Image (cartoon, rainbow, N blue to C red; front, side, top):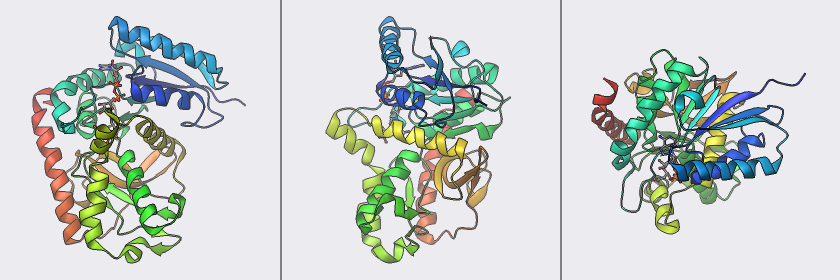
Length: 329
Ligand code: NAD
Ligand code: LMR
């Protein structure tokens, strides 16, 4: 029997990431090739943005996606989020050259208060929320705090782009395909303070750390390359990453909904106190997923270097949180 459609809201649908994301969702890349979807697309009320959104929708129509069971344009989150099963909160201002992601806090925090409240009011009680708009961890924290009637576990932040960036750097270093690498993770904030960690990673079953065996490369090349990749792309393209961000969003939601089959991935989630990360902090953790639920990988040894790095990224998140106290109470 055919599955009933899932409702997916995407905010910032006429933006750069939206343009790389919507077609893939409608093609079944995110929820499965047997899962019909209804797209509920949110843009700001501005005439130009709404017109651009109509143009994107015309193109989606022109793809004649067999899985697309409906599509609507919205300027109000209360209608866009009605009964949704998945929310991709992308719409926000991107940073430009010379800015850090936390410089966007002021500009974007308000958006996530309004949208958190709207999710609380009208979304499915099981809605899975992914925040992409920067600063993603703190925006996800704001949305979660603004939606007190929804379970905190429904709110996540995107660390998957960092995870994929780290995978690709490690694969190049050890000269193996990305698919051969498992058990990699990224701890903390989606910012240059993130701690990409290959200490537990394996390649075809062998230890990546032993194969690389170069702490100087880890500290001076790998971590800065992954941490500053967003800025490097802005510098090169003049615009922030879009197709790779959309791809990471698809990966994140697909793995959350369809499961990782025991494999590790990274998700920004509200801490349950694991690894001494204070409860409620929206933090990147290694997780596995099954039956639509994620679980933090437990029992990993945190050595002195790792604890230092984890504390740095935690401190930054706590500072960001303090900066939005007035919005979340
Ligand atoms: P963009 O400027 O091309 O598009 C953003 C769109 O959002 C615009 O069309 C804008 O009108 C819309 N928008 C703004 N406020 C909105 C609101 N309140 N409701 C609905 N729509 C709204 O930007 P982009 O390149 O698509 O990036 C979007 C966000 O994603 C930025 O904050 C960027 O920094 C972030 N980002 C995050 C990651 C990550 O890994 N977490 C990666 C890349 C980009
Ligand atoms: C990225 O990591 O590419 C995005 O967060 C965009 C940015 O501002 O770096």
